[in-house]
Length: 268
Image: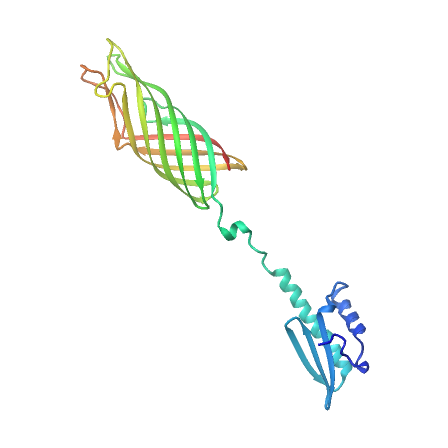
């Protein structure tokens, strides 16, 4: 269809374009509007096409048809303009292809109770692989020395190293629930009357069991983050320390242990 197929008695293409620009602005895409008016036996036939949109009208008055063509073109172009403005933007490539997992590495310090005789300072290294709502991680811990003494002034001075693995659920970026398993290796020396030695494996014992924890991360300033965490452990494996030829246990690892840590980390 030719954009200028308008009989002279009906008007001109220039007038048509001028009317469109008055209603739609100077940037109106007048070139995309194709208008043709054809004379027939019983009047005139109008065709207005914009892209795939086609409108046809008949009337005895061709000037009225040209005014109708302006109304039709304005309606179609406005509809296209609104549809373009409200169309959703394409999803980012990362969202379409799946969220990239993130790796974090953190150092922590806190209080550990139940593994060694009194509550002691614990130092921790933690790594995590995080997805949107799930993840898993590994921890390494060192527990500073603690001391246990009995009424006969015999006792043991212990420290510990440990490792753990856990899975986590993240209902939000600030909260993590954890379930895992951890083990600790306790070692040290006895003191008191004589030179005590430990029964069975000298100077060492194990503790191990499932863990349950919760972490709160209130501060996130990529790549830095800081958080707090608390954890409990049920010791299904628990050792004890004895001095040979001495009937009393110097120290039994408790059934339950707990810890609380402050962590500072990096996200990669």
